[in-house]
Length: 308
Image (cartoon, rainbow, N blue to C red; front, side, top):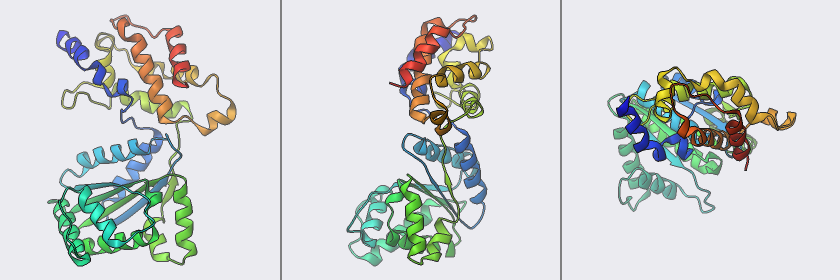
């Protein structure tokens, strides 16, 4: 126990909950990650999802990345954040991805860039010959860029690589899907937008309980320590069976008590939930003990602060 208490003091300010950058699985994350992991077992797969800002898109990509390491440890991952470019050209896209992969200077010729990227992705696919292409801000990917991406994927599949593509974007991704359809590009629509779902905010107790469960049981910090988030934050209370899950109903009620029906139906963004959890832990920091109980006044204060 003393070792764990010392670790708590050492790592408190770096803890993902305190820094508000923890990858906590909401229901949407769990459902989407499950779909991607199942689809990735096929030769070629694509899935798209959209969400409003602060919903947790980046956390979802982080979760996918983590699950890839667990489910397909011998595969490769390329993660790319798209940027709008009115001068879009195939060479510019290939060069941007080459730089993202850390491959050094791109070839001068278009053919050279194609060959350089294909060789790099083939190597990245690893011994499992499986590759995940994760695109953030995918609404910024142009129609021509989708065509070039399709060609890259086709080349990889022809060489025996299993490729799963994930397009994660904002609401404008729906408009991109409609534009692809209007332009008669059924090949691109079927390839990338056959599956497109809304990535929802946390809007009910069930969803919040999933987050609490992750803190208590399905998390780890520092990496390789075996300590869950809750265990490191409150080691003495945790040893005496304190779990956020057991208080999730009260915590959710306090957090949402001031919201109207419309706001509650819309749900809470991960930035609000992350702030709430951070304040909860900071305010209870000095109270860690075998008898620790969450204090109503401190919980109410954390809820108020989370919306500021």
